[in-house]
Length: 112
Picture 1 (tube, one colour):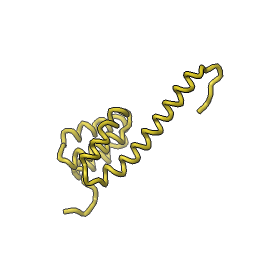
Picture 2 (cartoon, one colour):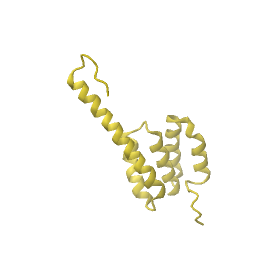
Picture 3 (cartoon, helix red, strand yellow):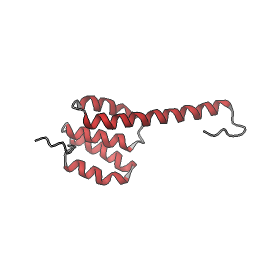
Picture 4 (tube, helix red, strand yellow):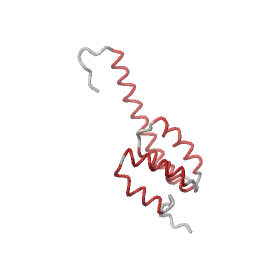
């Protein structure tokens, strides 16, 4: 982080706190990415992702993962809302969202 000349210490501390919060949020997203897609307990994954989606409403990947979990639970309406948020934040997710909706959130796990 850069120290700007004439910047009061309070602003520097606030900038550091915001930077740390963003780094912590990024780490939580990475952990959720792994656990939510491989977790047998979807409710636990959703319980972790829902608060993150409120704390970090600008993180498209959180909404995307939440949508996939909702689909796997058969909650298509909730999934559509989550996917819409993800697509609005990151339009490049359109293809992944379409694929997830067509597959009903299932990964290629070979389960049938």
